[in-house]
Length: 263
Image (cartoon, rainbow, N blue to C red):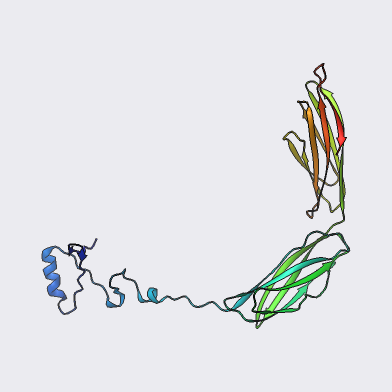
């Protein structure tokens, strides 16, 4: 590596002029010292040498713009309204009015965006749109914001599903050192298919995917009261649950028996 030499704590870097370069070169070669030629345009005293473009920076300023977002409302019953909140945010010093519109798909009925435009600043600006459908299912609404040639679009999901009811029955079978309980779960309403999630109160669980019902056989080996819970989720994310308490008894003979109590 090139050597920088000095006396004491003060390091000295020598810059050789073009006129005396040859003489200095011969002298320093004789002394065994390497020469560093530094272009004047790149020289920075007391700092690392960098190019002039690096010192001045070459990043151009960002153009004013805006962003738009929209919330997806919770699941509601068919025929009930659902509302999405629209947020418009200024970027890079944007000022101006953003006009808002919506494009609903077939089967989804929507009011106009209210208000139909927002002026920034202040930022963010907020608007909303209300939609409804008579038919179950998810619907994707497209919302568009325009201002001075700038166009941004965002989507919101509207989901409609009828109420869902959940229940299960219990069938108890004694045998050996364990009591096997068969759980039969059903669900109605919502939007098919369903996901049945079981917890049996003893740390065990099971998951079934079905269009109609779910059956699980679970052994209990220790006496006690166990709360079994069935949670059902439909294809749109609508949820409901039911629970029962299973009491496992151990009589004098050692064979367990059980009873179920609705909870």
